[in-house]
Amino acid sequence: MSHTLSAIRGMNDLLPAQSALWQRTESLLRDVFMAYGYAEIRMPVLEPTALFARAIGEVTDIVEKEMYTFADRNGESLTLRPEGTAGCVRAVLEHGLLHHQVQKLFYQGPMFRYERPQKGRYRQFHQWGAEVFGLPGPEIDAELILASARIWRQLGLSDHLRLEINSLGDAESRARYRQQLVDYLRRHIDLLDEDSRRRLEHNPLRILDSKNTQMQEMLAAAPRLLDFIDDASREHFEQLGRYLREAGVEPQVNSRLVRGLDYYNRSVFEWVTEDLGAQGTVCAGGRYDTLVQQLGGPATPAVGLAMGLERLMLLLEVAQGAAEAVQADLMLLGQGEAFMSCALQLAERLRDGLPGLRVLVAMGGGGFKSQFRKADRSGARMAIILGEQELAEGMVGIKYLREDREQLRIAQADLVEHMRTHLAW
Ligand code: ATP
Ligand code: MG
Image (cartoon, rainbow, N blue to C red; front, side, top):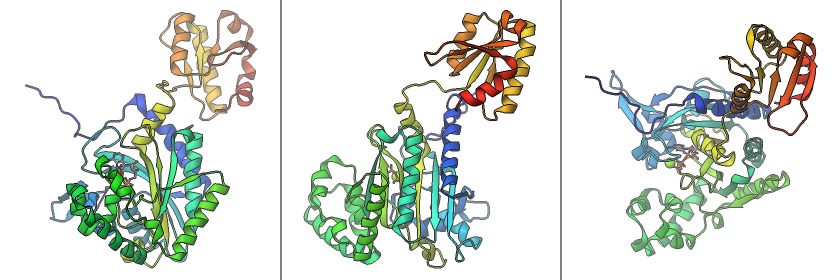
């Protein structure tokens, strides 16, 4: 008797049909962050449970109910990382990377949260994260947000994402606000759902974040955190807004944006889309100026963000329509042995001369008609035609598959140079 094995609920395989889009997106993310002076850091997927409890906060959704925690064979409590910031701070402290130096770091990889799986919400998901240590000013918050805006531009997503920002102020102003908020919420206790009543004691700010539609009106009328923040945080927040607007990024102030983790202070932000239902936050971040110290390090200002890659891919699919994944930039077409030996060599020369160019040679036979269909399906921009006549004359035909342009004929010897000047990819 055989039974089928399947993946754990909420944990997905990434199949070849999707991996090209992931790879292209990941390499774009890497290029953009490197252009801003960030370097990669890789942390283990498992960390001691205490790290997350201390960093994220005991009374948060993540620590209360979402962590994959288990005892290893020695009885030590370990947790599959639910996010990257805590491990990143642990790593920079452990390796002494914070002594009088600024660190701009990025990381990527799987994160694990025991949540109810649905579109855009999984139990193993992937984040792209960036963290900056050692810079206290609003300029780095702005630059980090500008880097993300650049990514949306390059992915063609600018029209699908809007930027929401808020300031959480410092710990004292948050404590003052908390009292006012709790007083207000107590007056409306009959409207609070069970979750919110529970949070009222320990984490009332999180109630503002509630997605419960029945509470929205009451929450909209609640005292505004922004009215309580300290002067220095206000100045920081206003300067951040100015920098962003000057650079052409228009933020929307959302006074109810509080983020779910305890470590944030001052600037917090989210990039939100309307295209993915309730799972609309594609990227989120903020300042966490006290976390490094809280984890035993020197007082170090810090700011970071994390993008959910699955949500980013879902949004790309929406934005680009159901566009077929592009496998190739060029495809060489023809029949017979003479074609094949010429095409194999030409393809090698193209790959040598233009690293990164994706070149396919039509294999598996078929007439021109069926080869053109394959070329079209591959997403290639041009078909390079090596018919009998071209082979005899040392020429190639170039047919544009996606643009309304005349077919060309050029010498085989000029093909690499021609592509270098005519093909931007
Ligand atoms: P949400 O409110 O949607 O639960 P969050 O505030 O818990 O999000 P963060 O901890 O800020 O999320 O994580 C940063 C980003 O990682 C999110 O904006 C989202 O894009 C992504 N993300 C978080 N949890 C998941 C998940 N379970 N599945 C897929 N992506 C996720
Ligand atoms: Mg969550």
